[in-house]
Image (cartoon, rainbow, N blue to C red; front, side, top):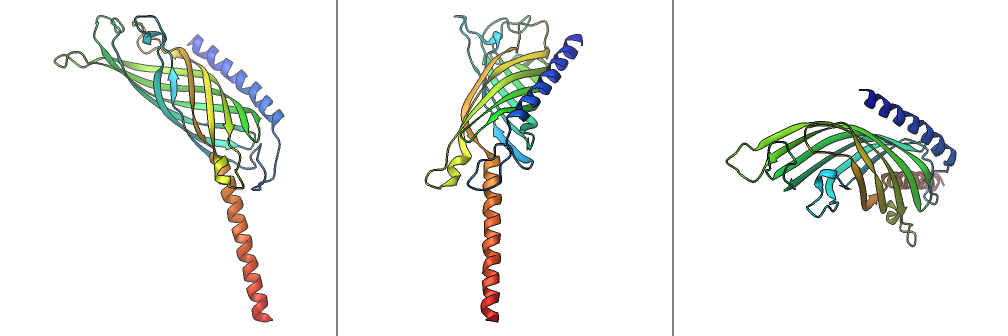
Length: 255
């Protein structure tokens, strides 16, 4: 418990310092279709896919080379006017492991299944027209299960447990600009994410299992806040044009 308290205290101090940095770099901007909002003027829903490749110390092959493990996930949260994101992420992984001795008292090939949920806090250091840089802090709770796959006649489940993941990372996104006034292009971009995850609570202490490790992610990004800003601006312009037509029709009838 002492290690957990110390880790949580470090996370709190880091979050406080990063909030100060992110607020110092933000700028307010008008909500128009011709301007990029570096600091949002209102809370906006954020939804993102989050596919990561982790390097666990127990997933190395016989040649002692690190092997990336694919972990699928998604995040949903809020982008707040103070220029940071908060929300929840859900992740899962299915992996077959042939390395013997991973689970105590067995040399069987096993299938590892991970399911975990995290809460995240992500302040922006920079949020510019064509790129943005942010820091990611995560804390969560998960479930793991290991099943035998080499002999169907034997009991399948051989180990299971819970674990508490925490992580620190850096996220860098490149945004596409509108092309010849076609604004939907700038809703998309590319995201680069890298960091380190460490476990505050091991699920099976007697085994060689260790989920501590580096991770990285490279993939497409969809900027939901840009979409909603453009939609609001388009809807506002549509209402203004409709009101102008009503006024003209009224003038023509009276005239």
